[in-house]
Amino acid sequence: MNKEKLPEFIELYQSFKSSDSYKERMDQKAITPVLKDIIWETLQNETFTNQHLTDFIHMFKFNCSNQTFDSKLAACVPNK
Image (cartoon, rainbow, N blue to C red; front, side):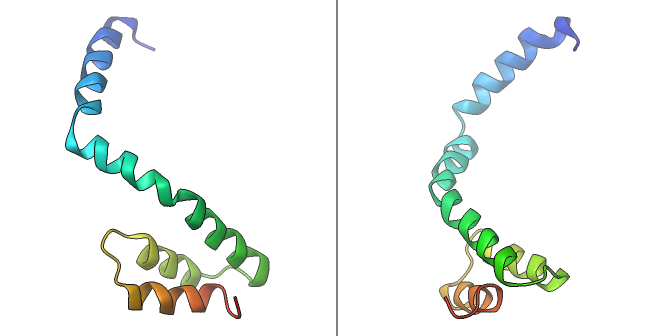
């Protein structure tokens, strides 16, 4: 680690922590346990495929519609 750049990094990080982007990321943390459960259940019930990964990307992206989320969830975690 380059200790000479550490003060600059700390300053940049403090600036980031006061940004709207940081606040949005922190707000998104609330759903993390639900997303982990979806991944866990998918891995318990199915052989993981590229399609599952694609479905996760669609489900977990910002502004996913309810209809898309529901259809992808049903594909990843059937009968739940």
